[in-house]
Length: 191
Image (cartoon, rainbow, N blue to C red; front, top):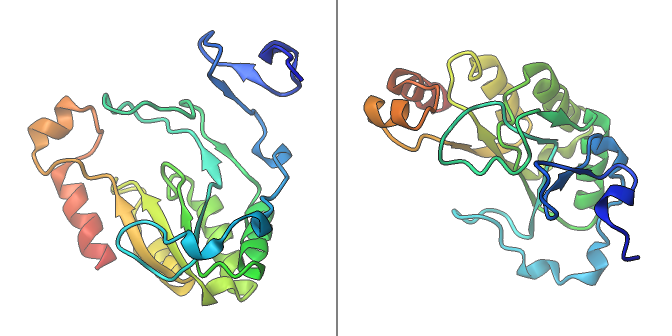
């Protein structure tokens, strides 16, 4: 409608830039995509290839960490959708023939209670007959055997870790807030 961003309800400028904005309440973003407009067979997903068609969703936005290379497009404050909203989207995607879902949250395992509620909801609703990809942070407090077992039971077949380097000097220089020992532990537990 040609309105300036400042006049659009629930749109806030971040840093004063005209192209950057964020929605404060992710649950108010309720419209699911009309997948009938797309040839879903063309959505092959991320590498390595998994079940097709594959689709991406986000249950949270934002990252509180200070890595110097990150654009941090979603801001430092982490905002979460209600787990029921995420489960509803998964149900919808499955009903449209989606065979794999890639959660593209910056750190799916940042809030264990939230992550467990989603993974448990996937299991309880029988949605673990499709495959899932997750992005985890490697920090010792964030990677637990309990969460990994629950992820596997929910149908997670691959977890992406933002390792970046196995040199402690490089990790420190990037301000990753992570140690090589934590990375090794996360990989060992995941395997």
